[in-house]
Length: 207
Image (cartoon, rainbow, N blue to C red; front, side):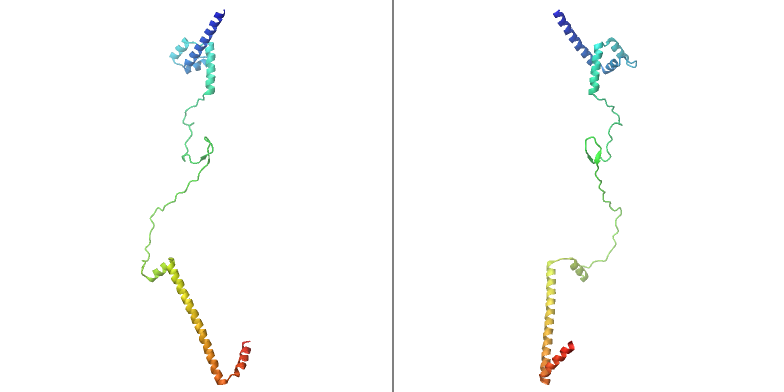
């Protein structure tokens, strides 16, 4: 009995393995017809003959359904159509994507290009410049900055101010000298008594 039971168990395992191998070796069209329970009439005649010759058993159909369920859960069928493909951006993907498949949340501003003039500008003829003229030299000196010129101009201004001050002092000294000479002349003519009286009159007139 033990030998017969062990041999029957081994035969069952061998049959189970053979059933799995037969299911995996079957094409996809026959598997789909087996899960549906019937073969469509639109199938090819060669396939009809193949399925009629190799009729599946109950355990083969059950194993095939299990395999189909596993495939449906693990695989995802996607139709390759042009409408489902993501359209490329017209701006060549410029911007910041916060996530891989997210739309652009931050779009960079476009820099406006400088528009160049379409026509050539008309250059009006101007006055000819004479570099040797005094007017041109004055204009050039008024614009140019040179340390030597500044020092010479400051020296000339200081010399003019000093001569003006010397002339003023000389004029004051000459006036004081003339006043002294006049007083001496008056002393000779009128004497020294009239001086206090003249001083009082001048003070009264000034007040």
